[in-house]
Length: 62
Image 1 (cartoon, rainbow, N blue to C red):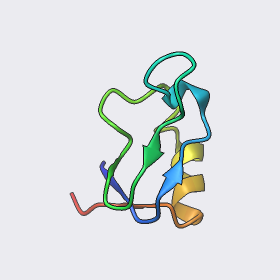
Image 2: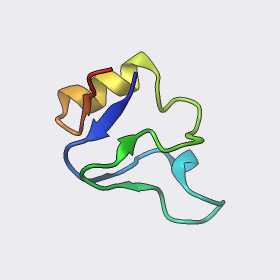
Image 3: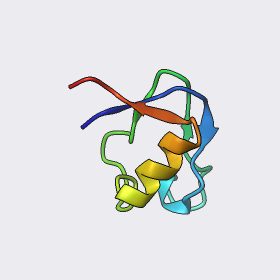
Image 4: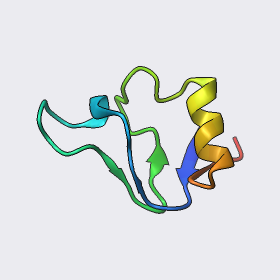
């Protein structure tokens, strides 16, 4: 499954940062979710449901 960001947002998980102490990852409209090499938890059913129902991402046609 793949997803596309439909509304820009800053990831709430501190593990999304590129390095310790760096800013959290920003998903811009049109980006794929999650980023390549994403962190554990980015694709859990609960997290995907939260982002889809909140209007942040949508599932791509595979």
